[in-house]
Length: 149
View 1: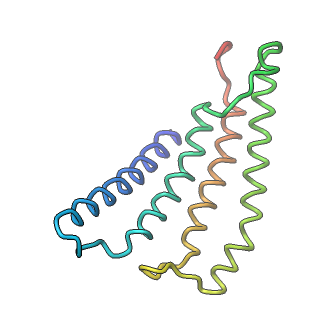
View 2: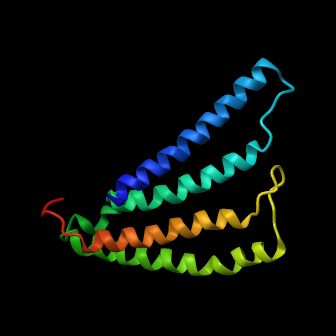
C-alpha cells in the first residue's frame, strides 16, 4: 500500500514537472517575452519531491543496485538483508546530518530568488524522503519473501 501511495505521489510530481516545463516552452514559442514567473523554483521543488519519493519506492520494489561478485556464490538473502540494514542506517544518518543545515536555512531566512519561497521547504522533502527510505528498508527487511525471488 505504501508503495502505491509513493508511486502515485512521485508520478504527480513528475507530471507537474514535465507539464510546467512543456507549457513554458510552448508559451515562449508563441511569444518570446512571455514566461512563467518562478519556473526554476517550481522545477526545483517538484524535482526534490520526485527524487526523494522515488528512492523509497525503489527500495520497496526491490530495485536496489546489487553487485553480483559474491551473490553468485552464496545465497543472496543474507547480503540483501545486510544491504537493507545498511540502507536504513545510512538514510537515518543522512537524515540526522541534515538537521543542522536545515535549521540554519530557517534561521537565516534563506529564500528562493524567483518566488521567495523559504529554502527550508526543500529540507522537508529531503527529511520525508529519507525517513520513508529508512522505513522502506526496514519494511522490506521484515517482509517475508518467497524463496527464489
